[in-house]
Image (cartoon, rainbow, N blue to C red; front, top):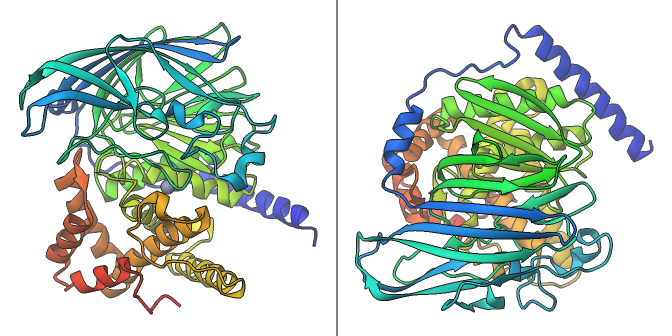
Length: 494
Ligand SMILES: [Zn+2]
């Protein structure tokens, strides 16, 4: 059968099944929120210990440029006196001939439908320097030093020229994506943890910040952001790992509440938007009940032009417009929402331990489908798909005599190609947690992960902390198992 026709029939069948599920459920959402520990006031109280980023942004449609005035209330959480503060400004990874370009050579044609177009940042604040790989780091000198525990307001002015690219940061015919656009404070942990951009994975390592953001754009644009609207074009958010904005003249919206959270679906082209919103609400409710209360007032699910399926930001996710397979589309929604817990509430260094957030997001997604049978997927079935993907990848590599690694703890740029990265972080990452769930049952693993989430909320997970937390909770000797798995020595996958 013609693949396209077959896909269309599956999409129609799925839409029918899910629509019936919505209608037959008295509340629409099968998982109602059980409890709510985190009040907005509670969130604001915790937020006082974290820095605040104030952004005043103006978008010009004619020059495709974003002018930004940024003030960062920076708190020195280290034990050192700091004589400079560093920020990542990733727009420069989109310049021509970047050493670590945002787009893999094999993806250039798909990413730039109108041919390559450069993006870059210009910083106009005096006494700052641009350095780091591809000038993606801004260094601000602190003349008299900033002592541990002291805070300082740091001003930065810059303009970002957006590339015409279907990426985290860029504009297309339909949308303006402003992901990772502002100057993001670099984590100081035994020195400044600056990393180059990478077309493999999500090259980010961010602490939570509070945000106060205004953005002006020409008349007619609808604006989706990571924050909660507090006035015209004015948004605030507390304890977010990132603040993203998407603009479009073509957005349609659908919204509903899950507990105290308003979930809004911004979409451009979706024949069954109520099903997509239903999936998003169910995912939010399920993960909130299972792992940790979702603390934010809003969650925006934004369909946009994007190269890589989806992307997670604080309280906002991108879902790629070109994911046409309906089941895959629902899968991306669940995966990106799972990241609100793994990357968002519990952070990690995504450049060095991508297996933590991607593995947990993939595993959590599989558990969501296991517990929501209307989608027709199971935990075991998804695990088997991952095993088959790994086998297919290794067979092809072997056939063409290309070397590859099974290790899961490489830096993003150490992976030779995006598929090698995906296999080792998504597929093996999911299987690592699946193997543990096979030993002790997924409900017990859910409980252990919930405890881990509550202990590490707004902090960073590391391989060590996660391994020992699971071991303590589950009473299993996991250190050898995890070490072997991460080193790629497991032989139980194939
Ligand atoms: Zn992901």
